[in-house]
Amino acid sequence: MNKSRLSLLRDYRPMWIFLAIMLALPFIVGLIEGSSPSMVWNNEGTYSKFIQGLGIEIFILALFALSYDLLFGITGLLSFGHAMFFAVAAYGTGILLKFTVYPFWVIAILIFIASIVQALLFSLVLPRVKGITFALVTLGMATVFHIIVTSTDLSKYTGSDVGLQGYVVPGFLNPSAEKLRFYVIALLILLVMFILYKSFVKSPTGRVCVAIRENEDRAKMLGFNTANFKILAMLISSFTAAIAGTLHALYQPAVIPSVADLGFTVTGLLIVLIGGVGTFSGAIVGAFVYKLLDFGLRRFIGEGASFIIGAVYVVFVLFIPYGIIGTWYLRRAGWKKNWKRGWSQLIGLVKGSTKKT
Image (cartoon, rainbow, N blue to C red; front, side):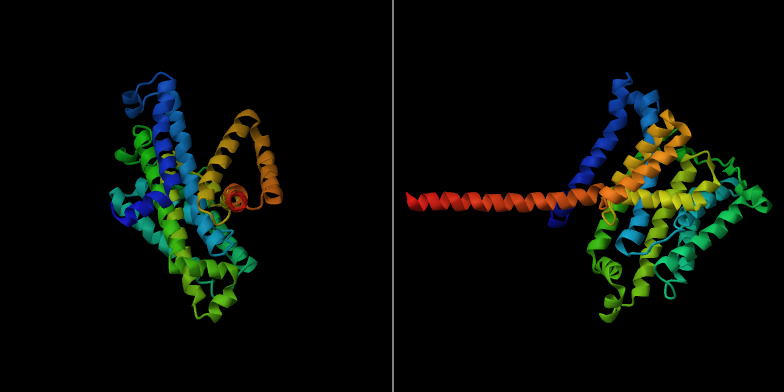
């Protein structure tokens, strides 16, 4: 085994453990409820299918949050219109499935092109505005798209306020008949994108993006064309959010306008803040925490869940500003430092006592 493979296994060990747990979880739940592995494989077992469905929703949210973390946490671009990247892909997938006879690979290519176009559209304002002004401009663009999908003039295609319904998902991806397959595909896509994102940040290009976040003027003084790097981050982020939007359209029976509004962008931001800004793994942890908390609260409290989730957001901002993973990194660094100091002191005491004897 060469060094690159060993490095891949070592550097991403937590992700391999996460992958193994997530792959085994439906079968473990199936055994607990009395379903054999073959029954779970054949999409039988009530609780196992429930876990798979909940996992799919978490993986999609994690992908969306991952894309937002690259833009906001790594490059320092605050966008209030990030949901548009997700919604364009979701609506585009649904419309193409409903009104065309294209094979799915053609639809995937068209969605990819759409993700590039909308990222370039956002990028038009990058050289001119930044900070909160950029955030407001992106909000304006996303608001225009939200108005379009809720327009009654286009209700034949978008479903207006009701949402886009009635499209048929390809059989090999149909979550009703192939939920376990869909679960595994969504999980593997999330894992691949996570590894690619981590590799990107470690690359020279990724380091420039981090430098832009820290001090864009200094990066310019060093000779970097910061606009190009921000456009690249926008393109990668848009493509990832488009994958999440496509998976959402394939999994859900309808695409509703709420995925295009400010609230969904705030959801992505909240997930990133809960997990840890700029960590990537925080996007995955944050998606789990957010979705499980949202599901549990809405099940037992109902509409009041939104208030409690908002309160949790305030608590995280005030008391855990670095998020779950960010705080863990800081604590672990402190533990390592204290452990090394204590070990050095112990060795010093041992050496001192040896010299005396």
